[in-house]
Every structure is written in C-alpha cells, then in structure tokens.
Image (tube, rainbow, N blue to C red; front, top):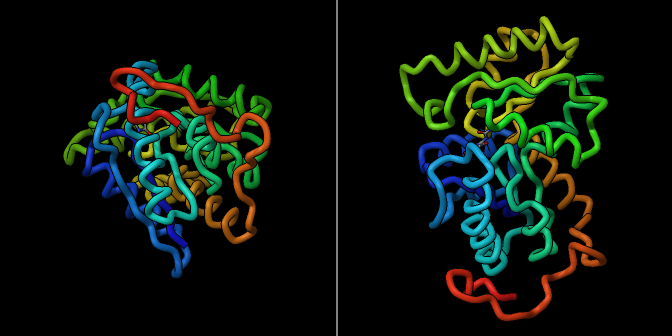
Length: 243
Ligand code: 2AL
C-alpha cells in the first residue's frame, strides 16, 4: 500500500519529521511517500496561508494519481483542501485534524486541542463544528509557538506546549490531548509520558485511518459532492488545474 503524506507547507525539515512519524504508525508492508508541495507558504498559520497552500496540495494529489497512490494524508491541522482533494481521487483522503479528533473519542469522552498561535484557534473551532464533535472538544488552546519555531533546536517550544497541555488538563475537564500542529508529531511520546494521558498526534492517527480504509476497500464516494469536478475553463494562474 502506498500512502502519500502531504505536508501542505514548503518546510522540508518539517516534512522529514512528518514522514518519520507517519512511518512509525504504518504497517510493515506500507510505503510512506512524504512530500512538500512545489508552491506555497513556509508555514500555515491563518486563512490566507491555508487558501494558498491548497494549490500546491491539490497539485500533489493530482500527481499522486499518476504515481499509483492508494491513499493520501493531509498533514496540516487545518485540514486545508480536504473536500477539494476528495473530489479529484477515489483513494481515501484523510486530514490529520479530523483523524486525531475522531480517534481521541475512542480513548476519552473529552479532549483538548493544543495548537500553535492564537489566530489558529478559530481554524480548529471551525473544524470542530464542521465535523460535528463539539460535545467531545472541551477546549482549544494556543501555546503561542509559531509553527517554524517547532523546527528550531534550542527553542522553548516543548516547554510551552507542555505547559498548555497541563493547563488543559487542569482546567478543561479533559481526558486526552490532541496536538494541533503536524509539526508537533515528534513531541507526542515525550508529552504522553510526562502527562500520563493519551496524546494524539494527527499524523499517526491519519496514517492508521488511511490504512484501515484501504484495507477495508472503502473508497471516497463519487456520488454527490465528492464527484469529480465539472469540466470548465480555468483562467490565468490556475489554468493547468482545469478538470
Ligand atoms: C499547522 C500545521 O499543522 N502545519 C502548519 O504549517 N500549520 N497548524 C497550526 N495550527 O499551526
């Protein structure tokens, strides 16, 4: 089974880290192809970043169709371009936020999300509403760490993430922590050991979910709104993306 794990930002060190986390969750027979798009922002920390990251992400899904991919993982906690990606493939497409928050519900009645900057909190709130899991999400907290600081050795990112997790456990009546950034994947085990609760990393959750869907033979529906996009002219910058 070939799973393309797309980090929709263009920071290669983060993609390498995401690839390692994906591999740690994959079954022995699975191949993980971790990529960054050719176009897009270095990190995704707001609506504008998200909107423009979708172009490079969708380019990678389109290329993946020629590469024989069995599933795709969108490795950014905003799940950018998730519905659009599902329109252009039959293979399962799994977003890290959706996978993490749904799997958290199997190990705790309530979870808290610890994300990067305050401005990304509303993005996670929108997802909670969209996925209909508001009764499970007990809190969404920003740890005030920009995404690219998670890549800096010697930064105090780990300490700040840990403190936000501790605040969530003390104040949110929560049983599990969902990591709100794919760039936190390498912190998962250490946090779980220090906190003594399940810490759910979306990259691992999405790979495990994608593998399960492929194994079960459950592909993306082509009936309704996930049907292939309708043929039409696309002008200018996105000319090459015309369906
Ligand atoms: C993310 C993420 O997962 N990747 C990225 O660039 N930004 N999420 C976030 N909350 O900042």
